Length: 243
Picture (cartoon, helix red, strand yellow):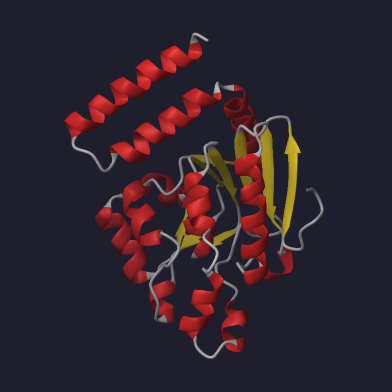
């Protein structure tokens, strides 16, 4: 599938699927074409038994500077433009992947870029990255999970601070808030991300999937129910590992 997309670079290396947003002149702003390319790539990743980890990066000076606002001007209204952009559920595809997701963030990570990052399992950012969820300043609220994944990672109060004000923050604060989990020097970012992805790709796939399921589903359960689920998943993992 390499080279078949106008807005994405996609290739496989060993057990890692590498997906890089590729609209550098537009700071990788999320467009309808990018949505369609992402949907196709994520379908391929989901169906590929050789892929054990997904690594997402961005080309050029930014990870993703948010929605492509130039497309809003060609639509009858912002509401219609936004609805068109989200007609294909790439966010649901990311959530539904069995493989762990690593994202490497540099430059601007705004709006949709933050929402993509929040759906990853390991988020590593360059020390000079800039984050924001500015939808409220555009008369909208996030429509790609920001009101749900933000509080899950940062807590409701911290997430509301960012969502209500739309303010920008740097990598140090993003790390403290839980928006990212690791920090790297700009020159080391991609190499560090590849190292993490490579490590995850060689771990038993059944362990990765069960760990992710335990955390994600456990968030909606009582502590006792969550502990019960953990025990069942751990027992199932031991059984799978013995075969």
